[in-house]
Amino acid sequence: MSGKPSFSTPGSPRSTYFGSFWAGHRRLERHAATLERSRSSAPPGMISLVLLMLVGGCAGPVRQPAVPAQLTEQVTVLGIPNARFWADTDGPAMVREAIEAMARERRAAGEAASPGQPLPPANYLALSGGSDNGAFGAGLLNGWTQTGTRPSFKLVTGISTGALIAPFAFLGPGYDQQLRQLYTGIGPRDVYERRSLYTVVFSDAFTDTAPLFQLISRYANEDMLAAIAREYARGRLLLIGTTNLDVQRPVIWNIGAIAASGKPGALDLFRKILLASASIPGAFPPVLIDVAAGGQHYQEMHVDGGAVAQVFLYPAQVGVIGNKREAFPRERHAYVIRNARLDPEWASVDRRLLSITGRAISTMIYYSGYNDVVRIYFTTQQDGVDYNLAYIGRDFTTERRQDFDRAYMQSLFDYGYRQGRFGNPWRKAPPIIEEPDGREMLSPEVTPGNKPVTSQSELSARPAQSEVRQTATN
Image 1 (cartoon, rainbow, N blue to C red):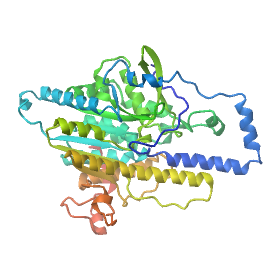
Image 2 (cartoon, rainbow, N blue to C red):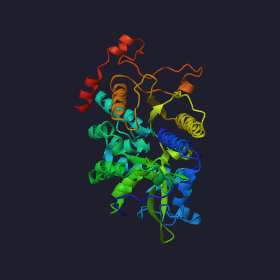
Image 3 (cartoon, one colour):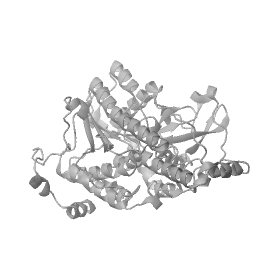
């Protein structure tokens, strides 16, 4: 497998099971607006004529054969049997993986965790998609570290931008500085290169994400992979979600098992999984992953895990099976970081086809993401898991001038940092459940004394942004 991922033309993802993907619609809407302007300024029929001329002499990207439908369940990657799971059917296999992880945890703990003794409380962390809004989660984790109360997470899951945060969160506070740099030190050129309008017609996306792959490779290196493998040996799990477009199904990648495999292609696979999970269909190219089935080699097309779910903790089937077997006899706490808001975003929609379509899609995405946090809430309540939710509140008002706007991301990082360091960002239920009368609080933030912030003077008493940034770098 090469160091740079292969790309090909995406299919049309099915918005089922967990919901629809988050982030990227702003980018698509802008490209749609460009097309709209080009169409309105060109002479009648000119665009169509040019496209027809180009079609005669150009072809789109190619790919290796997809896995035949009858071999879907036989697929292996790098020969690692537990490298990944189908989120919609592999509940039993995931329960076995969780039980084996607890056995590794006991072995790592030695006599302190003998079979007759209950294991200590387990903390789970789920990180959502949200594109450049991932700066919120990065800031929150950095601030949480400073309180001295941030736990070690037994399970960390991530999708899209959450997938990029997940390895740093999994490895702990020692990686906070790298996480901060990743979300406050980049701009659009570090993520993608725009393709020309006519190139897009015969390509697989509006942009080329070679810069993002290089950025991922800078941080996801041999040292990080080895550190993940060590934590996997201690019974901890790092799971990343992607969407397999060929079969329209969600895939959960077991990064610890891949890291511990010792396979020569493990690092490249790790990088491709992170890139795939953040590859917004249409905006970013899909990622082709080499697999084997029935003694033959094939390629699977993977895109943003948000095409199925914006955030996940574990499939509901895992909880149902685990409860029946009493497989998880320990106290459990789930922390869900939604790198997005939970209130709708107002806009005056132009009476144009592309504007209306784009707005409708973004509305669907918004409510899909809300449904994800509600779904996780009810799953945790059924399974006896303590639920905690953090998200971007209405009190964050910095405007974004462009995608991956460095000033916007720095401001959002600082906002998340203050939430984690000086307040209590965690809600015990989604707002629609916690405030059934519809009167949602402006923000989940509270003061250190657990008193809600009710006045501008109290807000002004908080450390200035410069102080927050100075603390975050220490």
